[in-house]
Image 1 (cartoon, rainbow, N blue to C red):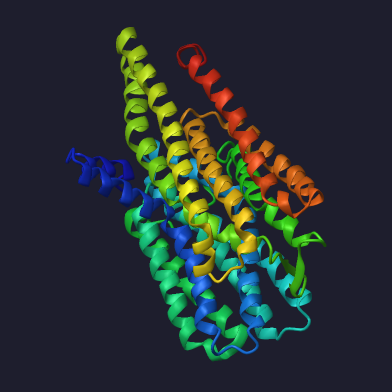
Image 2: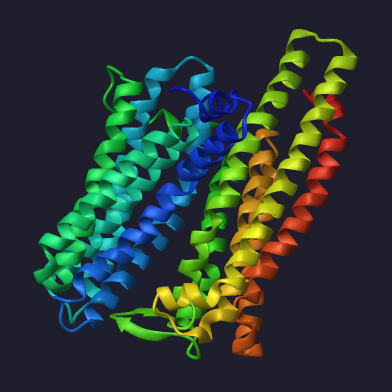
Length: 456
């Protein structure tokens, strides 16, 4: 499959402002599209249902259930997402493309078994006030979501961003259509619509893998062999997803900020909506991240290591290394600059945005700090991506674990300090993690030639 970098370079060849704008717009849609589609679709399902579903509290219950299902399915599959992506990349490097599809099937079988064993007992026992149909839908949706994340992360590792976006649009568009048709079915109808959309999304992505990497073997468990899956990547995936959701869990479960919604599931009226709105502001930063990393950085990264492997001159190797370092730094700074501009725009227009979203202006301070925090999250993502290119798995594990611990401690502290400090825990956790990551990256890039030649 063609890499996203090739597409972006082709768009930027025009050497004009319009071609540059098209490249950044394309990168923003490709990188942020699936996440934005997910947020908007879940909100729109609620909007579609409000005039019909009575009481309206059922819509809130549906959105809470879906949020929990997404959160825990991401955390569970985080154990294998990055590691299986690395396994797939290794198989491609060794010209073993035929192993991708059967091992994906093998991993999906394991994920279905584990997620099913977890979700069906919880679904059946934790919601005694709900119908049996709802409880079965709850468990089935969790299983399908786990399969969606596994297949999506594989396509992401294969740089098939366009296929991911198209299938997310198809899946969530179908969910909206089904929600409209099943809106009289109350909570069960909404959850069934969401499940149907996720299943269509899964089938679409699976078809892309099947078409791109066919195999005569249907199922295989080669990925479970010795040395095939990296434990550091498994822990990194777990910590990253856990860290992203940690502050949300704390606000949901804390007696001061959370309230019961359905069964054991809780939500935070003061925290949830500003956070969702803030994530819509990551599009500019994600666009810059994708363009700078997948074009400029990758170009000099490839030149540096090609020169090392093919015996290039020392001066040329050093020149390519210097250019790679420069582009990495400029890319991170560009992400910071564009997110700073986006943050200023959101803060200035914050009252109007809250008015359009029909949210009280009391949430404006929290929205402002959350926009800053989500911008930091894009910067952290850029840092982690550079470390992955350098194969610094230990650095990534350290940073994601640090982020999780800091988010836990600082979010609890922010709640103790009062409503004015809500959201600062998440932002400060990201800020400290980024500062540590910048220092480590500067150190590692300074020793790049030594480690390349002496530690092979």
